[in-house]
Amino acid sequence: MPAIVQSYILMPLYTHNFKLYSIFILLLISLDKTKYMNTSGNTILITGGTSGIGLAFAKEFLSRGNTVIICGRREDRLAQIKAEHPGIITYKCDINNTTQREELATWAINNYPQLNILINNAGIQLLTDLSQPVELNNIRDEVETNFIAPIHLGSLLVNHLKTVQNAAIMNITSGLAFVPIAFMPVYCATKAAMHSLTLSLRHQLRNTGIKVFEIAPPSTDTELGHQRRADKTQSHGGIPISEFLSEAMEAIDNDLLEAAIGQSKGLRAKREEVFPMMNH
Image (cartoon, one colour):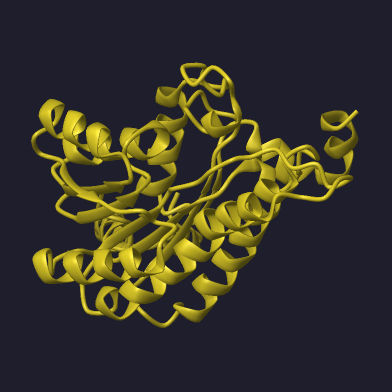
C-alpha cells in the first residue's frame, strides 16, 4: 500500500460519511500513483544494448510504447538488431572512449530532445590475479567501462534530464557489488563503486525531478564475461533473462529505487556470512 495512504488509513473510522471517506482514500491512491515511474511514452538511451540485459530492456521498453535508443561497439550486431526490431534506434559507440561518449550525448540531445531516461548497462567482466603483476590495460578497460563511463555519460546528460518530465538514471550494478568473488576483484570493485556512486547521485539529485535507480542483477545467463572465455559462444550461466527482466520491471514500475534482484537480495542482506561460502 502506498505510504501516503498508510499515513491516512488510521483516520478515525467513526466518520459520519463513510462514502466521503472512501472517495478521499481513492483520491490519495490516485495522487500517489502519479509519483511512480511511467514506463511508457519515454525516450530511453541504453548503453551496452546489443546483447543480454541491455537488449532485453530495449525490447521490453519498446513493447511498452517507448522510443528506445541503444548503443554498442559491434556494428554487425547493431545492424542485426535493427533488422529484427525496426523500432529500435541504433548508434555505434565505444563507451570506453571519452570523445565518443561526448559525441553520443550531443547526438542524443540534438536528435531526441525528449530523451528522459538513461540506462547505464554496458559492462565487462575479467579475471584478475592480484598475486601476480597485473595487465594494466585490462584493469583500465574494466574500470573505464564499468565505472568511469557511466559517471561521465550521466554527467553529460544530467542538465538535459533536469528539463524533462519523468526523468531517470538507471544504473545496472550486480549482486557482486555487495559480496565479491575474489577471482574477479576489479569487476566486483567497480560494481561496489557504482553502488556507492548511485547512493551519492540520488542524494545530489534529490531536489530535481530525476529519479536514480540501481538494479542489481544476480548471475544472469548472458554474454557477460565472453572476453575471458575460450569458447565465445558459451554464456555466463545463471537465471534466465526473462526471470531477471520480470522482477526488474516490477521494481521500476513500483519505484523501488534500489532493487536487488533474485539471489542478490541474499548477498546484500548477509554479506559477511556469504563471502567465505562464495570464495572457499
